[in-house]
Length: 374
Picture 1 (cartoon, helix red, strand yellow):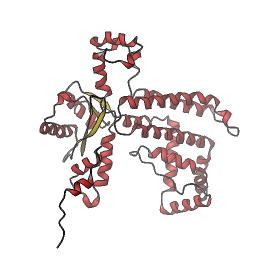
Picture 2 (cartoon, rainbow, N blue to C red):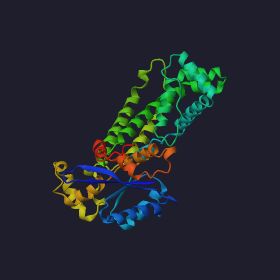
Picture 3 (cartoon, rainbow, N blue to C red):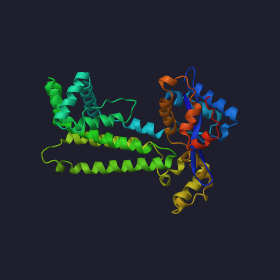
Picture 4 (cartoon, rainbow, N blue to C red):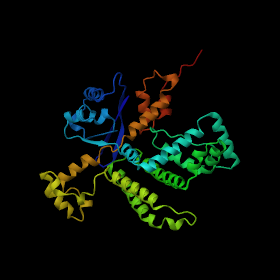
């Protein structure tokens, strides 16, 4: 299925977005197939490629392929189109930047969870153990790569139940695994992983939502980058908070390295401060306006004085910065296209589900003439 959405800006600068159309791809799902479906819709409805400002996609090869990707072929129809990789997808990729040691600890945590939940018997025994320990939860959570938030949820749950997990491993005779799990190094690494992925989950959720644009997402990501800078400064006082434990300098170095790498990766998601840009890197027709803009302290409140830069900026700032509406469509599709309705043509139902205008059901029903049975 190829759901397409559109975003428009009214004269009052109000942004409006809605589902444009939804078309199933009956054979292959290559970039050419997506382009054919979109082109056919444009032709039938009299839409022009010249009016299209930007395209936001995920990172699939069919979308971003350098030769046969959808974006590449769209630019052949309108070279001025601005293409953007979905911010939410990019944030999820950034979350995967882990040094080797922390990645090994993460994989070990997944291994422990898989063992505890490897059979129905283990699951029941672990639940009984948690109940006897008056734990807040009775089960661990699985981690699935395609569900981005599951990693943070899994790590948070295993950290909360760490005492029950250690006792369960010991009862089941998994001494080597139990010893590694109870080690101080792993417990500290697990605490950090649980915290950082909880923070990344929170960032991911803030990036989701309708009527978002680059400017709103920029503020969210920049605030998270500032938080990382604060966390890095707080590491110098970390050992003062633990009277009974000493955190090795090696672990602190690895965690600080991960935070810096995470910060660098997040910096690449968005454009930098336009007042700090190197004018020589801009097109010649924009350089003089850019110099005036950089030295104008009131420029943030006035864009009409710089029409060339304003028009170029709007082409980047106005379009979708995430594929959230499309992802919402897939979630709605899962609810509509059930086992008992798998032959249903969902386009009309999907439009009603995703429409920002709530249907007036009472008025629609009132206009129908009921056929009473005799």
